Image (cartoon, rainbow, N blue to C red; front, side, top):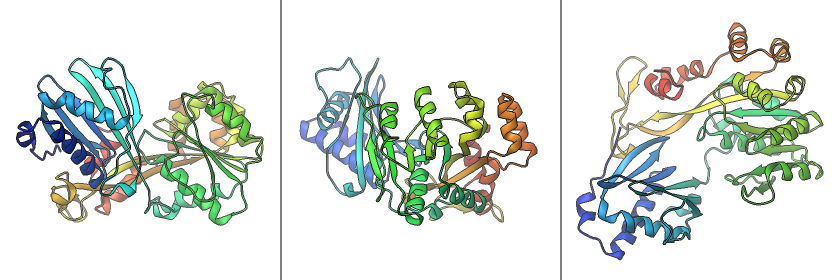
Length: 389
């Protein structure tokens, strides 16, 4: 559902520099107020569209006159410390501004990209995570929660988290690390992240600069000589990082990391495609956790349509979307004997998926059905997130 505050008429009459400054400040402030994760400034042939990503979905907030487009982009560039006179190249930076509610904001990243209709700008907002601090607060099913606690107790092995960007993987990793630090306070915990999004008391956190000399592989090799017991790598992006990480999991370290993949079986095969030997995968991977975030129905306006089913309506409290906040759905695969044999035999994706199905594996869609039954989300939202037409 698209929402709009219909301010184009008022903004269209005010084109002075002070009005543009106030407009941009207002949009940045509104984004924080509604906990938007991203702000898109998208130029078209006739206007500048402003969209907020709310609970993972883009919503149109403003349709500004084309005449304001260059001034709005220039103001954003100034805030981000970018070159205002270069309109032909991509630029990236950080916005340093303060305003109401900004105590909850860790970082604002800005990315500018030239298009045929002008410069497109995206501002990403990173927030402090206050409520989702502990593993038992994330909403995992009882079985997955128990398995994660078991993984946290291990001294070595690899826990691999999969899912698309924005599926809550960093929050889950931070919660598992807090579980370890709380129950085993003497363990040495080190993280490598790009960037450090969530502060974890008791852990040594290292920020990797993707454009600098300290890459993930370089930092990981050095850290293994720093006597860590628990390592967290923000993401496995290349074969070299995967190889070093797998070796760490085989040599007395507990490694937590993420990878972009749609399913647990797909993640295991991707490791093989990166050149990791099948025996290394079966010996090092303790479990694969695949997760998504589905939008939570707004408690203020949701409408009952059946005994246990609700539908979204939309109100001022949820910005007219019918949803407010998101909730986790997940599936977790632990490597048992049959799965290890299949990997060693270099089974393909279809064979691995069939094996999991025959063993009664509860996939992510099944996990989501409990939330539909509890009136927390809708079947349409679940199907959309799981990629079902």
